[in-house]
Length: 140
Image (cartoon, rainbow, N blue to C red; front, side, top):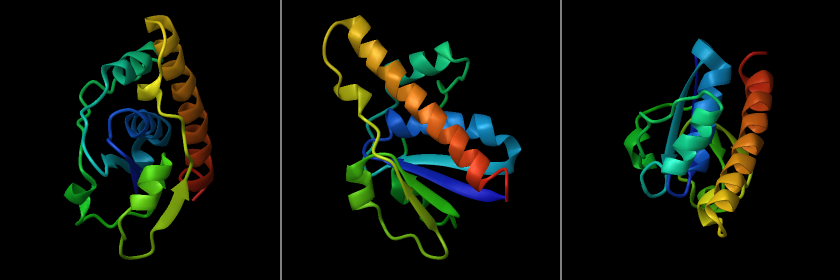
């Protein structure tokens, strides 16, 4: 079974959304983890927009990448440029993937505009996750 790590700066939004969707689309065909270069806690708005799409990430925790040093990952997906640049070395035959998603936690404006940005980024990550699973997990 493939082991996939999603890595972001703070493991609070983008990597949490990706973990939720990758788990959803991969089912029991992969083990999905997420972590950050730092830990900032799971953003409540990330939990909210995922719940609106019927995926519960309320039990997720914000983890530091160092916590997973002993796991032999098959793939690491960085979801922001900062994590891609700071990504530690993973031994073995680890495939690296990168997509720089906008950070919804940096959204400004009215509460509605902010949640709309979370939803927009969620939908981008959902499409990326579905595509990733179909290309790299389901067809293996």
